[in-house]
Amino acid sequence: GSAAADAAPAGFLRASGTTITDGRGDQVLLRGVNVNQLVDFYQPKAGIAATRPLTEADFVGIAAQGFDVVRLNLSWSALEPTRGTLSQSYLAAIKEAVGWARQHGIYVVLDMHQDGWWKGATPARADCRPGTDPMWGYDGAPAWATITDGAPRCQFTGRDISPAGDRAFQNFYFDTSGVQSALVATWGELAQVFRDEPTVAGYDLLNEPGFGETAPVTTSYLLGRFYDRVIGAIRAAGSRQIVVVEPSIFWSGLGFDSGPTPGFTTDGNIVFSPHLYAESITMDRSLGLPPIVGLERQFTLAQRVAAQYDAPLWSGEYGYWGDTADVDARLARYAKAEDANRLGSAYWVWKQACGDPQNGIGPTGNGLQVQNCTTGGDAAPRTDLLDILSRAYPRSAPGALSVLSAKGADLLLVGTTTQDSCGLQVWVPGAAMPTVHSTGVTALATVAAPGGWLITGCASGRYTLNTGT
Image: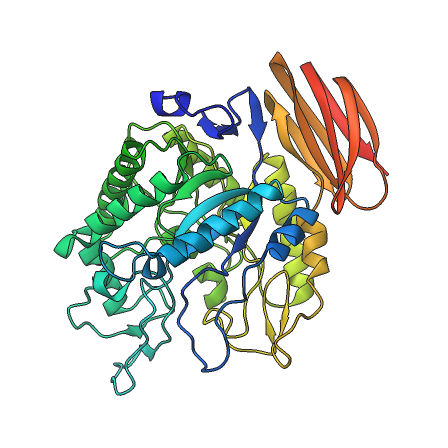
C-alpha cells in the first residue's frame, strides 16, 4: 500500500492491494444496501413524499439481515444550499445516521449522490424537440452550481441525457465559475467532520458521473483530475479513510467504461466502484437487445480495471426490476458470481418512497422494505430478495480467500493466511444454530446475533470452514 493507506489509523478500513482490509491482515467484505432517505429528491407529486424518514429502526433492520455496510446517499444541494456554507442541520442528520450505524456494527460509505445532475424539471411551458421528452427533476447539485447556459432540460432515452444536464456537467468538469472547486472544498470540510470516525469506511466522491459534452476527455482525463483534487482536500483535512471512485455513468448503461486514466492519483487508499447493473438497467435491456455484457462477465471486466488501479473492486449499486421470477433468478445468479469473485456490494435500495421520482409513482414504493402507497405505511418486505441478499458470508477473514460459496445458511469458505489471526468473523442467517466444520481454525465460537449468528475463530495457514444445517 501507499503512504496514505499505511497511515490509516488502527481501527480504520483501508485498501491493501486489491482487497479491503482492517489493517491487521484480515480481509473485509462490505455487504449491504444503499439508503436514499437523506437524498434531496425532486418531488413529482405534491403531498407524496419523495423519501421515507430515516430512523434508528432502519439500522436495526439492516443489521438483522447481517449487512455490515450502508452506502449513505447524500445530496450536495442539501449539504451546501448556500455557496460556501454547510447546512448544520443536514450535517447533524448525517452524524446521527453514522451514530446509529456505529451502534449496530455497520460501516458507512458517504456517497455524494446525483441523478441527472440536479433536481430541476423541464419548465412547464418548454418545447422539447422531436425525439426528446419533458422530464422530472431528480437530485444532486444545488441550483448555484448548475450552469446550463439555457440548454433545454429535455431527456433523450432517459434522465442522464439532457442538453441542460450535459452542459451542467461540462461546466463542472471545466470548473466554470469555480463550481468544481466548491465541491472539492466541501468534500474537505465533510472529511474533517468524519476523519476520526472509523465507522465511516470511505467517501464515494460522485455518484455515476455524467459525460458532459466531450467524452472521453471528460470521463477519463477531467473526471480523474477532479478525483485527484478531492483526494488532496480529504487528505489535507487529516482524513485517512478509503476514497471510493466511480467510472462514468457509461458503466451503468453499457456494462463497461474506460474510467479515469490509471495513475490519476498517487494515493493508494482507493477503491474502484462501478455499478454492476449488467442485464438490469443497461441500455441493451431497455432496448430489447441481446446483452452487450453478460451478468457473470461484468465481474471479469470490472476486476480487470480494478487491477489496473491496483485497487479493490466494490459494486456500490446493483439490482433488478420487473417480473418477480426473472428478478429472483438474476439476483441468485448475481449472488453466485459475487461469491465466486469474493466481493462485497451495496444493493439498490433499502427503502423507496411512493413519491421518489425514480419509482415512477405506482401502487408501492419499490425497495427491499416496501411502502404501501394507498396507506403510506409498510407493505410486506421483499423476502424473496432478502433471502438471497442475507446469505452467509465472511465479514472478515484472515489472509486471502480462494473459495467462497453460499446459499442461505450454507457456506463454504477456504482461505490462506501467512500470519496467525483471530479475525475470522462469519455471518450466518436464520433461527437454527449452524453446525460448523472447519480445519485450520481454533477458538471457534458461535454467538447469536439479531437475525442470525456470528461465528468467530483464529486461523492459521490454510483454513476451511463450512456450515451445514
